[in-house]
Length: 137
Image (cartoon, rainbow, N blue to C red):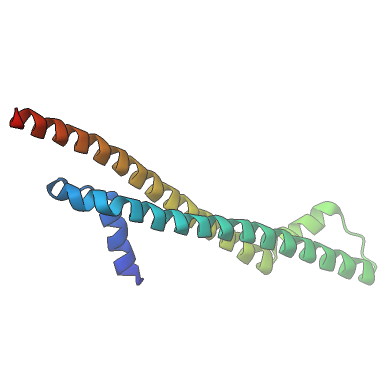
């Protein structure tokens, strides 16, 4: 799905069209399933990004420590930590994690909105049923 189509799908999934309740009822389960699947993928991306960050931090730490030892320089843990924190590879890994986490939070909001929409549709359907019953008596 391209970005514009995905954005429109998101808008349609979370908005409620009271003029077409039957269509809304028909699609809400599919929308919830679709966005829950995306959320699951986003959760995996966050977990992978956390693992990658730990790996990059550890590798950078060990490389820096070995280089310092090989040069005969004494270095403190604070210095090693500062080098790790400012390493380009570590910064990139943190950005990937932040981006993944942001996408996860966005999808959590969409799934929550669709779940709320589903509950609203159930209530609205029950109200419409009562109205129809009262008209037929």
